[in-house]
Each structure stands twice: as C-alpha cells, then as structure tokens.
Length: 233
Image (cartoon, rainbow, N blue to C red):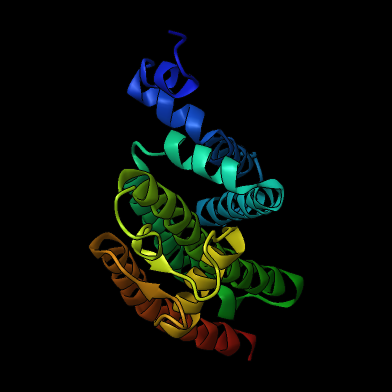
C-alpha cells in the first residue's frame, strides 16, 4: 500500500517537520533578522525594532495571500501538517510580540532630547511597532484557532457536527479563515467573544489566554500611546 504524504512527513526528524510545515513563518523571521543586522548607524534597539517590523509585516502580507487562496481542503491539510509544536510556536510568537513593548519603551527613552526628523522617525517607528505587534499577535491566535478547530473535528468524528471543532459559528457549518480572524480580532479588541460560542475545553483555554493577554496588551498600548503623544510635545 502506498505511503500517504502525511505518513511520509511523520517519518522525517521533528525539527525538519516543524520547519517544513511553517516555512513561511521562518522565512519571514529570517528576513527580519537580516534587516535587523544591516550595518546601519543606529542604536541596537532601533535596528531590532526595524527587524521586528520587517518580520511582522512580511508575515502579515504572506498570511493574507495564503488565506485568500485557501480552501477548506487546504485548511484541513495545513492543520494536519502543523499539528506538532503548534502550542510552542504560538507561545513563542506571542512572547516575542509582547517583548517588543519593552523595546518600544527603550526606543522612546531619548525622544524628548531629539529634534526634527530624528524625533519624528523614533516616534513613527514606535507607533508602527505597536500596530504591527498587535496585528501579528492576534493573527497568530486566529491561525491557531483555525488549525485547532479542524484538528478537533478530525479527532472526534463520532460527536454531533455542531459540537465538533470547539467553536460554533452561527449559520456557518464550515468556517473559513475570515471566520477565525473575526473571532480572534474581536477578542483582541474587546477582550471577549461576540456571537461565536466555544464548545471545548481546549478552545476555552486558548480564548481565555487571549482575552487576558489582550487586556494587558491593550492597556500597555494605551500607556505607550500616551508616552508617544507626550514625546511629541
């Protein structure tokens, strides 16, 4: 009997499987590191923030293109390939995104002593980092929800259709990426869910973690924006 692509994938080393399943993420990370290491006459924290923004914006664009071309079949296939290490990757990306807030504080440190274009550039980079970090973090959750949903559906075929997957979207039996983006970004904005119901402990745990993170992250962003505004005065 011929070996399936997934079975062949499982025969490879774990690290190779994780890299192969998330090639776009790691390629964008490589691009970000390359930008951050450019020999520019700026402080280390400034170059680090430039690298982060390059990574986050590249990944947002690549993910948007990938999601626009995806079908339900490709979503299921991607969920199977990215099964291993998905929680570790999620935690790492979220931690990295949150760490940028500390870098923003360091970047804004000398702003009051700067003038003209240099001051504008520092404040602009800090503001861009706030936006890119917020978008990136909640995109990571949206992708995690999507893949977790279809993994749960595949692992519990005997459960009622409306209960499989851990999330129930009103009027939508086969949710696509736009549905998961809606769910994740509503939590990111309001720190609570909207009309989507959770029906599994796993999804509730992830939604709880995102809601708590969103509350503290949004509070930190508000404080940073006040700091940025003060730096312009």
